[in-house]
Length: 116
Image 1 (cartoon, helix red, strand yellow):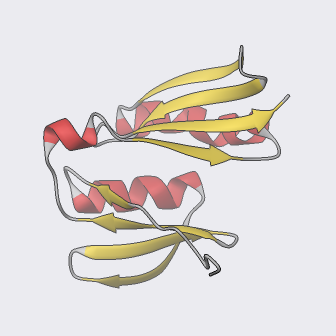
Image 2 (tube, rainbow, N blue to C red; image 1 turned 120 degrees about the vertical axis):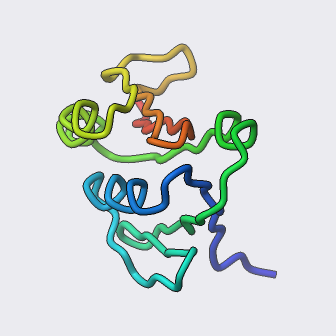
């Protein structure tokens, strides 16, 4: 048995705002069908859904493992003001990774990480 992909469904408080946010972050809109959209960067993708449960959104954490966290920070930093999101600059973590913490417009926490 081989896994071909794993694609989480990410909730949105405001679907259009989140769709714009993720595109500004660097994901490409592959397709959209009403209340569901597939966003992709390279071969990695997730599904953005027009569905929101506050407790679920605010307790969902996703990791995006990248080769250059500083480059991602240059994209994330200006999005803080544009979308009113919370983000923390690159920080070395005890688990041998450098990461950025980003809370999207719906409260979903992303850790954008790079191996030290």
